[in-house]
Length: 152
Ligand SMILES: [Zn+2]
Image 1 (tube, rainbow, N blue to C red):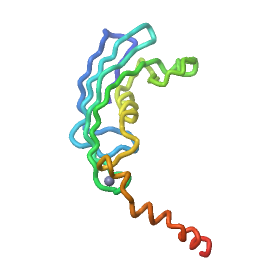
Image 2 (image 1 turned 30 degrees about the horizontal axis):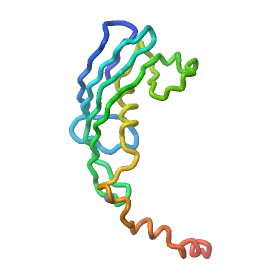
Image 3 (image 1 turned 180 degrees about the vertical axis):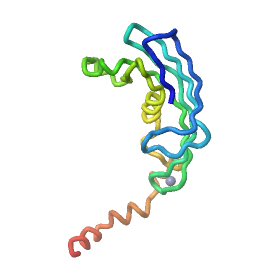
Image 4 (image 1 turned 120 degrees about the vertical axis):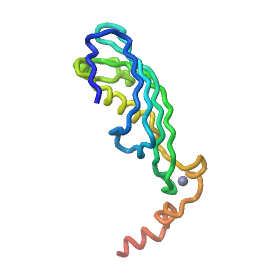
């Protein structure tokens, strides 16, 4: 865990991180390391900006055939950072804003949030897998299944 005080110090802050684990729900297991390059710049007193990129390899499960599937993450980060105190006062409705205590800024939280955004919603082993007929889904949709449920 890396804590930064973004209210002080000199900007931009440049970081080159390699994490061995990440605490994000609904992602696969991390293979090798999560490589992150970030630059935090100060735009004005309470307005900061973070840009950079996150790249990693995860082993996840294909949502269609349940096969182990490698998920390559290679996404850019471009987010505005504001103090958590401004969360309720902020009416700009900008969804690319990360709110956190600027004095005790936990960089891991930002990385986790960004990874969750970059990570694909649907994991499939190959592009065509979801188009193939899936015996599991077919079984669930058999019309007599419902009738049998009623009889039971
Ligand atoms: Zn598949």
